[in-house]
Length: 451
Image 1 (cartoon, rainbow, N blue to C red):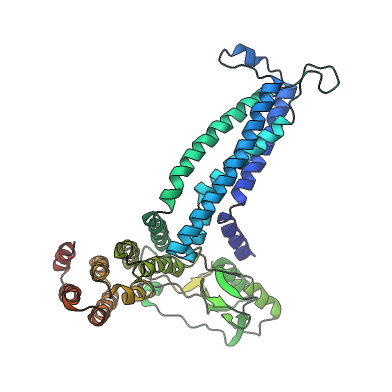
Image 2 (image 1 turned 180 degrees about the horizontal axis):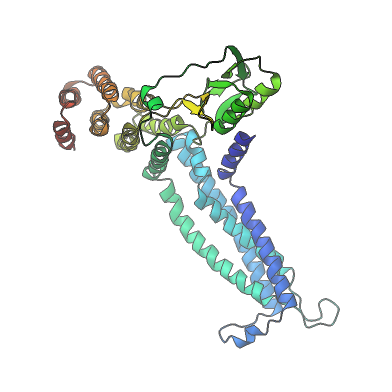
């Protein structure tokens, strides 16, 4: 249940209706509250403030009608501009980036401000009465405080419109798109990779379950695994005295015949227990970055691959993607891989998961980009420089060997893709890095020589 709740929160964060709906509801409550205050408390204090002038029914009604009409028009224009920007960005950089623009808080707040101002004005204008208009012979009613707040909302809307005009072109700039994805990738690595080396993480060994009987948890539907509630799995496993070994991870596509997890127990698990375990997995129609590190890496790889395609031929965009990938892998290179075992409060192993490792990140990023960067001299040189950045941080001999193998494979691939001086330029750079991997100072000089 908690996994589905987290998925719902993520969907709300990427929706265009939630924030505007909340702001509209707040505007409605604000309008009702201020009109009530104006109706039940005297407005004589307006007369005591020199720079405030009490509004008259006709003027107040005309003002609020003008505000309401203009705000709904601006809101429609804002929405059209946003959709046009989203369509352009998704077509230019990749359709999987659509969720990044949908989740942009600036666009949501802009649309919400205009809709809230419109709704506020409509509610307040309905309460204005001219003298004798109600048939009771009263002197009319103008909610002076509510009218003043309406003017403040108009000023706020103008400020938000100026912000929106600046925000949209900046937001769809390719460097801003890459930066947002790259920063989130670095932050996720800092969050998921441990700071200190633990024995379980260092060894990489998977402890064998002590229970003998095996059951399988299958997917309840078809789609991508978006959330895995590890806390719920540990609690269920502790209560039932079982060990759960995950067979999938966030980002995997599953269907009802896919095994999500293998359960080791002392007795046969009933359907109720398997159903509870299945409820710890939330599925959806698309991959999301909530728990899927690979998705963030794939987004940067997709942008770089599109930039290096013959129809675009933009190696400098690919270089920006490689810079952020190198920054993320340099952060991961200083940390051990996440542990495969999750224990309960009694320090007993309950869940065996499949965390994303440093080796997988390397293959998913620079391994996937090799076929594209090896066909372009500018991208190929920066590819090698990026790996050199990671080597300067990495101290683990196993990981250094992995990066060495990646350089050797790239050198071999570029020799077949490039020719002439371009091939020699990339090959010489790769050879220089390979010769100096064991010497940190020489490798650092090499990195600056490749500027």
